[in-house]
Length: 79
Image 1 (cartoon, one colour):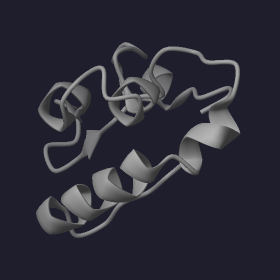
Image 2 (cartoon, rainbow, N blue to C red):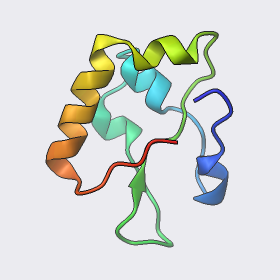
Image 3 (spheres, helix red, strand yellow):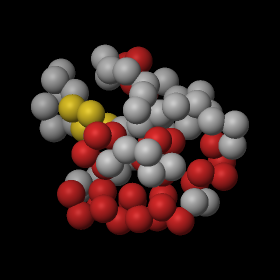
Image 4 (spheres, rainbow, N blue to C red):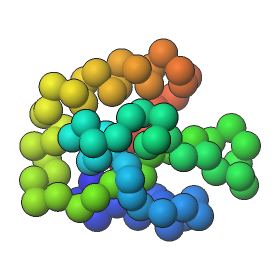
């Protein structure tokens, strides 16, 4: 989250994304981005840069987000 660059490789913007989703500023549907180059690849970019990215991973909503994603996707990679 601190220096997320995945969006650069997947041809997309960095916001809104994971930090916004964990902070409950957007819905999961708004956070998930489609990659037209790889038809089965969806990703959530880093989101708005925050001062405390590590603390966000301890946020209770992060666990809920992972549970929701696990119901929809076979693999979840976190960078």
